[in-house]
Length: 245
Image 1 (tube, rainbow, N blue to C red):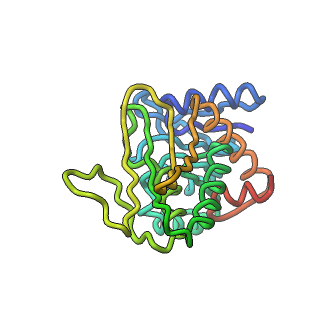
Image 2 (spheres, rainbow, N blue to C red; image 1 turned 135 degrees about the vertical axis):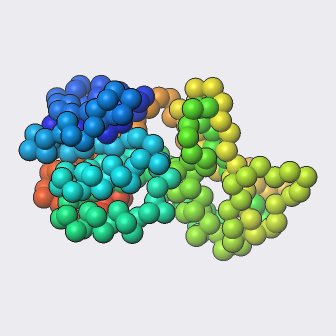
């Protein structure tokens, strides 16, 4: 594939390494820090774009790529409140987009393990449930997109929980119907997400710990290959890809 990288930070550089190692070509880079804009892109020379930028830039980038009919994989998080706008732009252009809160195959299996456990604990009321996530201190969004996907999936499966509380609680306890899931930012942590089921007699902990960003980058490159393997149109998520593999 000839890939355009939208964003050339740590993730963009890791995606470049993974893509080149798998025999793909980096045909263009868009990053304002480097002075490279969409004017530098020739859509005829691009098979797919992989977008890892900033939440405040993602939607504009997605729309610009849709207008150029470039199939796009988006790993940036905290923009999904504008999904209707993005969906219209992609569908009007007849283009395609695949997005995920986390492209790690391990994380996506972790989701399913955690959600299955939540279903099992739904009627076992002796167990409370909660979790936390930790990332490096340069991460721009909190909670992480991965944490949102994980916790929202749990919430939909534990009927006694009605609300997620993301912030740290000060001088108060969570209500019985609240799922507490705070965030920690420190150092160079690539990403850790933990879910706990706790009773008076034991605790079950389910944790995914990323050792590096390479797993996220590999999943994004695999997603771009899946998106361009057929002439797909419309909005997809990593769930669609996982059904095939």
